Image (tube, rainbow, N blue to C red; front, side, top):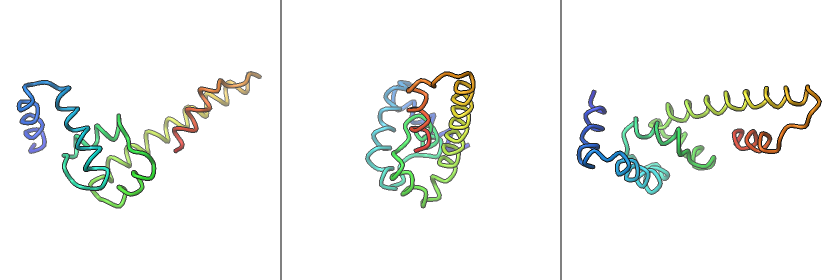
Length: 113
């Protein structure tokens, strides 16, 4: 319940402008959280990890910190599901005798990182 109050206070301090809240959290995410400095609440971490994930080396570094365990596990799970889906689509295209589009192969490579 406390985090909901924190979010409500953060939004009201930004005059109910979600864009301002996102930009300020994103700046904190890039400047502080990438080095492991705790500045954001768990909900903000989960949102940013979903939509603005760090590069693989930074994610590996942050995996040592327990604050990121849930968000990283969720991110890995979604990436694994996406890779499985892409593999099925590529396999289906190949089984029909066609070459899969390069965009699909590129996305699969990206998701596996």
